[in-house]
Length: 384
Image (cartoon, rainbow, N blue to C red; front, top):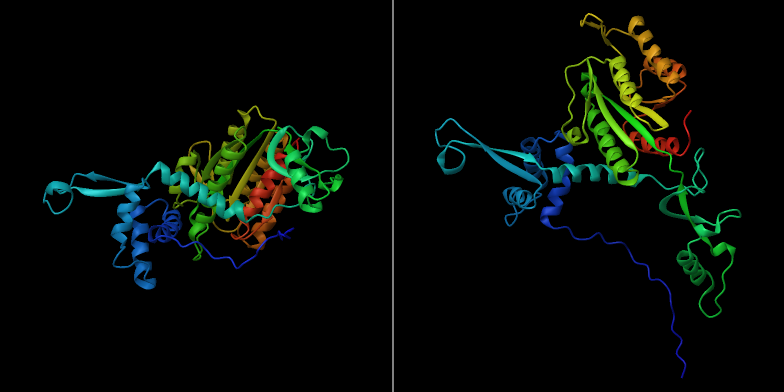
């Protein structure tokens, strides 16, 4: 007696997995530690305040239990500094004071989380739908697949994925395969990209009741993690600029803070171009995240020329000169302008024209998406 067995999929409402008490607090703690620039004590103080308001913990699992788990799992470490000898704190009554800090494991996790938050929200467009790029007949495997089109090399056809499509589309009773079932592995050309990311850390990045440095920091951490994991042959250098400019390592990103600085855009651009001159890669680019006008220059005699009132013609012209110099070196500058002031946007437009680069006038919400999409597009074409 033949039996008719029905095959198919059963759909049900999604139920989020139950998180442990540690995981619930850890998700909040990761966000707080980013906002506090790696300051564990400040992050824990904020967590205690949130616990009072929203009852995040229970008698069975307290904040103290959470701290012990953070140490046991290797996310934070505690070192004891000598105290004043009164025996009130520390171990064995020596008056020492415990100082908590995040570990290298936690630093890496913060970068990965930033990548998931920013890059994970970007929607993958259909293959071949890029405005610019050379996705298709390349020699760098991406792990992605696209529909077969006439002219695609036969050696790129993925038989496993194609057979799977044929089974789904036509069933197993009378197995058939046609062109619509075929998929090929998508590839990119092995063009290498050297990128310098400039981050404005002038005081205006935390003025007017808006935290602008944390989103910029998250973008930098996500971009660093993205490049080092997906495009290890590419290079990313990061610099910050205030009254001066100086390079920072990826490891320093979680601890990045603004300072009581003016904005020396020229110094940032000079350092960025010096970094890129040493790169042998053909493709070079500068990404600049800023919210304020250039207001500072360092003069040849070492003194600083500062003017925060409006746009200073002397400073602005130096910026335009730097833009033109970068253009001669075939280094496009993409500016992500956070400020909405019309006169500042006009300055960026003139700056972009001088460099023949690009400018995005964006709020903080779309900053990550724009940077990632622009990085991918620039990487797929040969910049000349």
